[in-house]
Every structure is written in structure tokens, then in C-alpha cells.
Length: 239
Image (cartoon, rainbow, N blue to C red):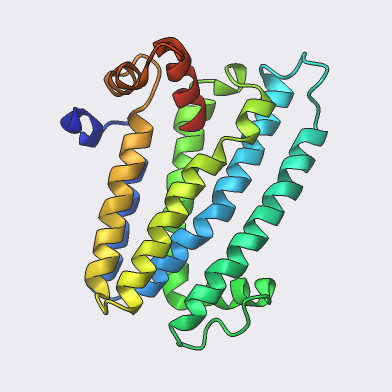
């Protein structure tokens, strides 16, 4: 099972290339542990942007096109409530990053100023494209090529980012404590990249008719929830 998850395929190639690139940046000194951490922290915004594009795709060309209860207002609603979510998360994250004491983050509530300071870091300008590359590749190869806008409604897509973001931010916060308080530095950054690689590959492997999906749904099924229902929910929340 693990071999099937980790084995490189055209579908997960962008995940592998992104992780290898980040490791290479650490090796040549073009990225630091904190810049890798910041890049993954900024991923929340990138996920939201691509999720909004997926909603637009479903509304314009796919399953939601003929559903009267769904319209472009859903995208605006998503952007508003997701924006509030990012704002709260950012304040919490900036409060933690301020502990590091490097002077980049000064006041947690100055959200725009803090994001501007992070984006102006030279290391981020090397690291962040790797995160964008991963999501752009997945958007093109998986969502557009497989015409998933015909599979999911805009309402279903709207709630998809939250499971992935919860896992992502948990890993970022945990890594932060290792980097700052454990003084692990580069080692913690490498472990962060490798751990994220495994998580992303695992999520990517949960596809319709995949061995991973069949295995997990079989293990989780019970008298109250059928195997098919679990499969449907896993596909939705790991998209």
C-alpha cells in the first residue's frame, strides 16, 4: 500500500518536483528553515484561490450550471468567509512567528504589513513558486483534464479546502516549535518537507477506484456508514 502511495506517477509528479526543489534550495543555501515554514504558511491563500477557480469552473461549464440554487454569489460567499478564516489564522500564526524574534513579524494584527514583509523576503521568492507550481499542476492535470467541474457542484467544492488546511497548519505549527525551541533548523525544515510530501501523496492517492480509497473505506465502514458513502466523502474532502 505504501509503495502505491509513494510511487511517482503523472498525477503526483508536481508534488514530487516541488518537494525536490525545496530540498535543493535548502542544500544550496537559497532557503532557510523559516522561509520554508513561511512558504507552507502562505499555501492557505493559494489553496483558496484555486478552490475559487474550481467553483467558477463548476458554475460556468459543469455540474452547477443548471442548478438554480447555485450561482456566482457562492464564489463571493466563499471568498468572504474564507477570508475571515485566513485573517484569524494569520493573527494566530503571526503571534507564534513573532516569538522567533527575527524582527520580520512585529504586530500580529497588522496582517497586510506582515504578509508584505514575508513576501519581500528573498528566500520566499525562491520557495513560494514551488507551492504555486504544485497547486497549478494539480489544477490543470487533475481538475481540468479530468473535467472534475462536471463531477462536483460548487457547493461541494466550497468546503473542500478545510480538511487539507487543518492538516497543513497543524504540521506548520508543529514544525515551528521544532525549529525555534528545538533549535533543529535545517533538519526540521527537511523533515517538514518530507512529512508534507508523504501527506500530499497520501491525499493524492485517494482517487476513485484507487487501491488506497478501497482500503481506507473498507477499514472505516460500519453498520451506520456504508463503504460507498465513506468513499464519496473521502473523494470530496481530499479533492
